[in-house]
Length: 325
Image (cartoon, rainbow, N blue to C red; front, side, top):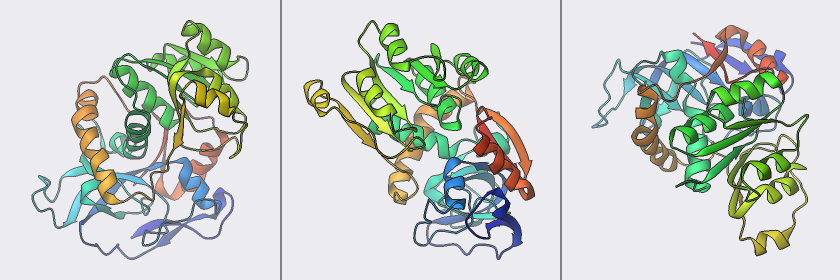
């Protein structure tokens, strides 16, 4: 089968086309003939040697795919051979065929193409796990999304807004801020020209927000602590701005703040299966009703994966960058 491999750690040019054997299935897996795959920031980290492949996973990049089930034991899952699904995987998505745990497969939502469905798993699993399970966003609580124009950002904005929450977001240009607001953010804050802490306090009457989803870290930490409401939760999913920041522990204790975070790739299948079930129950109906939509910035043929990574690293995109087969 055609695939894209990482010849050595380095820049986008180390992504090269190759021929690989079709994956052999493990217990509980199905084989997907891939129609499209998503490009994600962890793929970039893996390519540069900063995101180790979990034991037993494919060393080929790619964490999400959509396509046709062509083999595997489907049991009583309700799926059958030939069904179109999207799936979260630990690796191997940049290829013509990909093995995926059956429990991490979801039907392609009605009205979506395979390309659009392939844009869902990594971001939707991540957002649900971190904003709603770990961050416990509920009721009339408010959410601040750092990096609102990223794939994660546009997902978090849309899901939280569709579920009735006030959402604020940060982005790095007027165009990106406008896109965030069109997707449901009440106010998008240009972090290059505005102080998000001051704007959040103004928008919430001095209270602050209940949950912050952050992929920046670094010197954002002290400002985020001040931006949280009492009993607020700060959830880290990446550290693009650095892994260390200044923490006022007095505020954490006095205002009962929670600081947490997670990575999705190493978690077991059972954990991801539970998220899949929640997405199918709570989010898939919103997609099929047109209240939430994948945002595709650009699509590339599989063989141009290096160009897709270069675009990802430029941060010029709004939404998802995709590979088509």
